[in-house]
Image 1 (cartoon, helix red, strand yellow):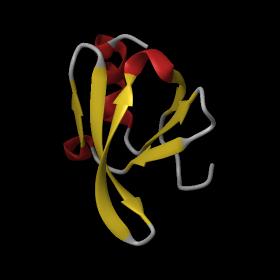
Image 2: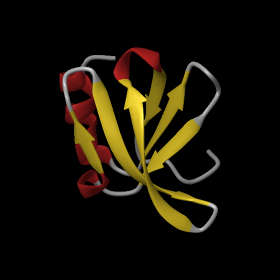
Image 3: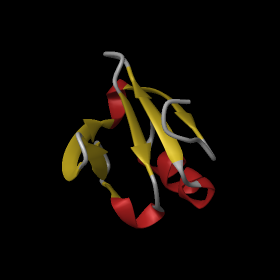
Length: 71
């Protein structure tokens, strides 16, 4: 995925990002993601705690706009 394409989808948060390794990451608000040309840092909930994870844009298989957790 290109960084510009992901940036354009931020208006439709929450976003569910699916990775090629099967992980799914929910971006609750546009403020919870920082996008660079090759990576995205996401503030997400893991086991009830907020954590920052870094995703490689080339490993994103799909982004589902207006998603909910577990969609």
